[in-house]
Length: 297
Image (cartoon, rainbow, N blue to C red):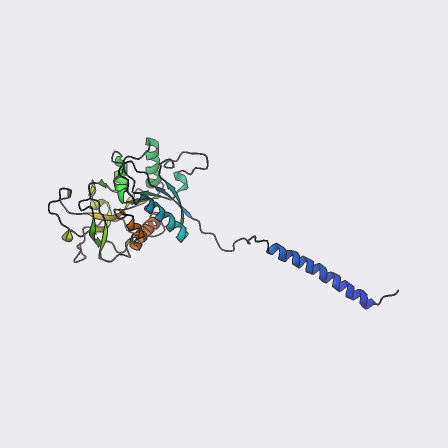
């Protein structure tokens, strides 16, 4: 039987269309496999923060809350990932194996109300100081980080001093914002009150740090208080400083568990970690005491 030429042309068109349809269907099937295409935007490089919560002395109930807050801040902001440890194994530059990270992996170190003489040998201490001083990595000390490592002189030099009592225990502390331009305290008013435990520092000097927050000496009760040792009545609540190339931040705020539900305290430490990581700028220059009433030196 002789078929018309138009029939063959139509048949060829149908065959080609079918092949194209099969190819398109296969491509559509591949696109529906659930495999996401490669991202078109640049990936943000996460910083790495190590939080240490080891306690060899007094154990604060707020240690877990503080550690968890730093973890949540990094996760929610997408700025850093956090490793939480209650031991000091990672405070070394030695290769630990076992996929364990050492200080070379991290960009900042946070001591969350550590107390007493931490389990660190001489090489670990040297590595930690080198991490901050020579490598230019950051350090954030929370509350009892000042009540730590009394027999390690370099630690006191790095953080700015040591704990020497809390004269008023936990109370409504009248606080003055001495450096409202610093990112970690920018959100605080010039004068405010926080219910917390304020440490009295020893072997501490205002001319070696940048005092960010301090107690208002005009609103403190000094009567019948043998725990008051500072005759200058200069009680710093937070400060920043340099240790070599490294950024160091410390605040006595964060003693209570409730403090870590306070948006002001959380923001302070969030901005402190960012500053310690070198993400923001803030002064470390010392300045004379600022009056709570006049705002002047």
